[in-house]
Length: 176
Image (cartoon, rainbow, N blue to C red; front, top):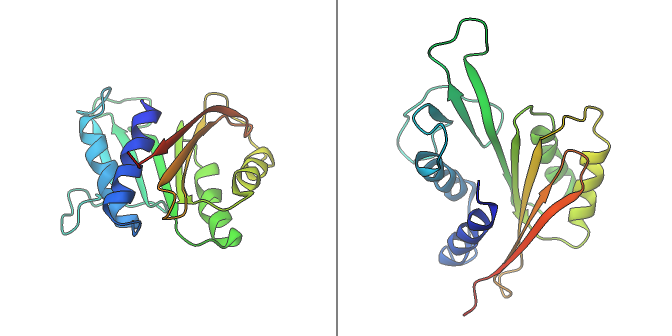
């Protein structure tokens, strides 16, 4: 998955929405992304479906959004494989952020996406939250996207491993 392009497109959406991005906007973005991204797109389903007014799939989980790979030809395996879980939190209150990020930390999905507004020291708090989680599963990744204050038009994406270590960082500036 091209993490750089995801952060860049989220930033474009953020700027286009005049810094008034909503969870619904993020859900629509990731629903569209699920339909075009390579891999198992023929078997990929999105819950809850992110398009306003449509209810393509009925299943719902405790996340803002998740991608599932459905295996119709299964006999001794799980017919549903959760490929991605997503949470977005627009409050600047650490307890609200920790509650949402705690949900994705608890998931067995290989890719966990968190989107929130930037606050000084927030990355370090999220890293501590991940490091303090009891179960460490190799090859699980967290993609954290911070949308900075409206005047800066910046978004920073961090790819973290299951121990909270930074694997990659990308910064996007919407100003020409």
